[in-house]
Image (cartoon, rainbow, N blue to C red; front, side):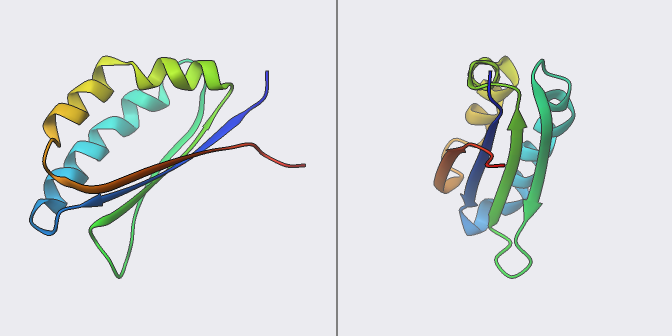
Length: 96
């Protein structure tokens, strides 16, 4: 089982920055207690406040996939519907 790093970039619509931020913050504590979550950090761009970056490290891709199907993530998706301008996610593997 190899670790998985996730880099997620979330761009909120300009009029929905606080909504997206609030909903992303709700994910932090619950996600950090999930099985397989080694690190889960949320960042906001200092110059472009609509840009959020989520940096995650998981024990395995399978455990990350379980997170992706968790009820709190579904609640986030529902709460931010129409508030996200762009979303990208990258699955990465550590080297060394």
